[in-house]
Length: 467
Image (cartoon, rainbow, N blue to C red; front, side, top):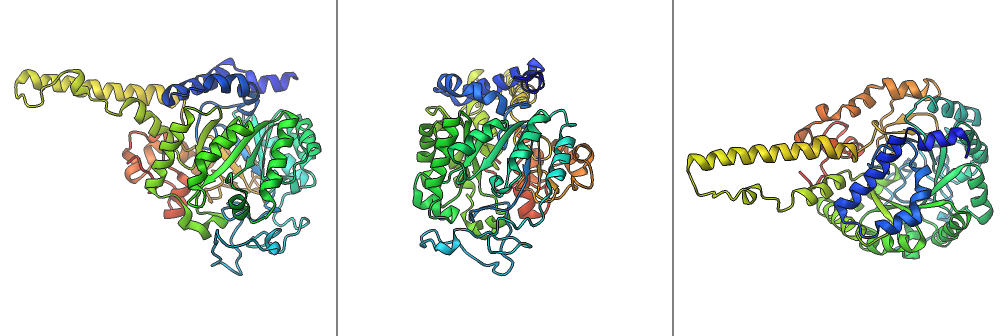
């Protein structure tokens, strides 16, 4: 390991210590019985992938950038945030029970690109040199040490390996998010040589039929498993990305177990946010009831799983597990043996002490302890998302442009954007129920969902089940 890479991963030592502490605190809250197995099996490979992490939060952890280097793809996933609805057919609805048409195997929809899939159609896509310049500017942001390359399907770009090697040369730890259908043994080894420490593979169901129908390709599941086997064979950390929606909700428990069986180190459980092509299946998003069921289910299955499962677009999960650990059936009156029927002055004084004790305990937990480990929604305050044309968003589900990295250095956008600075100061700026929520700092609501549903990124998250 060269000195530059060593510095990016291990220094300062307090950074790694905070990562370890976050995992241990999470394990304590959940009651994670298989933590020991995760430590012995996955922790070493997870250290480079978590380079720069200061804790746990949405989309894995803060801080890191994600670069969508292309919106071209060999699949047409029904929930894809990177693709717009076909402007010629905006009312297309998805029917999970319909049979796949061979003609849909290689089609993408975009508002400006042709609908017929073409590997050479580089609509709104930055050149190799422009991508490299953005990587140079990202290098100026000291918090960023790991860089995720996504799409579309990043492996479609002919210059991907040149880009990965350049990123590696600049000191970044590379991670690639992919549907894995194009990964063979050779491709996996080439990715590893190009500095890829982790690969996130999209997998929506243990059922090939459901996965293929969601991905709109009759071979998607088979090819994804081939890619997963190649990734494992190459010795690269395997992460599974799943989007929870009504189409696969009843299969999620089996999918977590399957991820464990596949040897996955990390699993990101995305919630469907109705953006991009996903706006055509808005009815498949989980309502409040199912959001809470998902959080309950994940906290329970985590106890006996050796894969680390984290949520995306459900920052309430962190508040949920804290609330369950410290405040479920927590009765300060019982602790102090207060007789609620008593009207004595002594009892009122005790009640005042009890109220003060409860407030001090709450403040200690939520203002001193938890914010050191959990960050909830990281949009704009621990994460930035770069689109194929260089536009910079707070996150992939947050369709609000804060500037263009070709026209303005991205380090300047990260530092000076009013939107980013408002999100970093959300505790004082959020509106509605989120403004007064005790879990504001460790949750904050899904800002992307709030923006898509209301047009105001500081409004309350109406899908929250905590408040």
